[in-house]
Amino acid sequence: DTAVSQTPKYLVTQMGNDKSIKCEQNLGHDTMYWYKQDSKKFLKIMFSYNNKELIINETVPNRFSPKSPDKAHLNLHINSLELGDSAVYFCASGVRSGNTIYFGEGSWLTVV
Amino acid sequence: QQPVQSPQAVILREGEDAVINCSSSKALYSVHWYRQKHGEAPVFLMILLKGGEQKGHDKISASFNEKKQQSSLYLTASQLSYSGTYFCGTERQAGTALIFGKGTTLSVSS
Image (cartoon, rainbow over all chains, first blue to last red; front, side, top):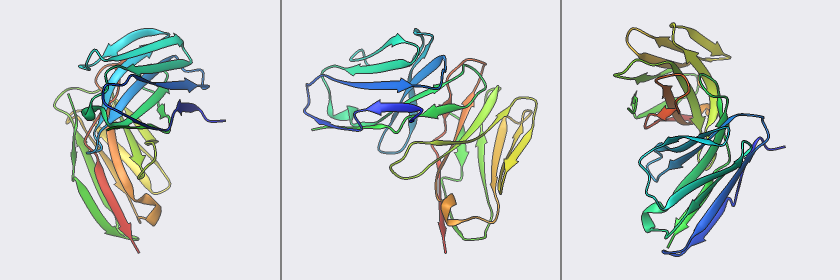
C-alpha cells in the first residue's frame, strides 16, 4: 500500500481554470504538508496542517486553498490557474517535530 | 530562512567520495537529508538532531555541527545508484516545517 498517495499524478489545464489535488496518508501521522517544486527543483513549503488545523501558511497566493477533512487527508484547491503555477506539487506527512516526513509521488501540474 | 547547500553539483566516477554541505545562519533543531531522482519524490536518508551527532548507514553518513549550524553528508565509494539531487531540510524549532536548500546534483558515472 502506498503510504502517501496523491491524485492526479498528471494534470494539464488551461489558464483560468480551477483544479484540485487530493492527498491521503495511511501512516497514522498527525501532520501533513504541501510543497511546491518549480522547474529549478526548489522545494518550497506552502502549507502545513496538524490534526486538521492549519499550522503554516507561507506566502502563497489566496488562489491556493488547502482543506483537511480529517488528519489523513489534505487536499489542495487552486483557483484561476496561472502559467506560473506550473510545477510539481508534493504532499508529505510526518509526526510533528524532529521526525521523518514522507513524500507522496507528486502531482505534475501544467498550465497552458 | 533557506539553508545554503554546497556545492551545487558534483560529478564523480564510481568508487569516488563526495561531501555535500548544508549551513544555516540560524540555530537549528534538526537537519534532514533527502535524495531525489529525476521524476520521483524525495526519499528520506537520515535525520540529525541538535546536540551534534553523526549518523550513517551503508556508505552514506552525515554529521551535524551544532556550533557552526552546519551539516555534512558523506558519500563514500559512490555507486551509480547514488546519482540524484540531494536536499538538506532544516527545522529551526520543534514542530516547524522543513525548509529545504536548493539541492546538490550528484552524477556518478562508470
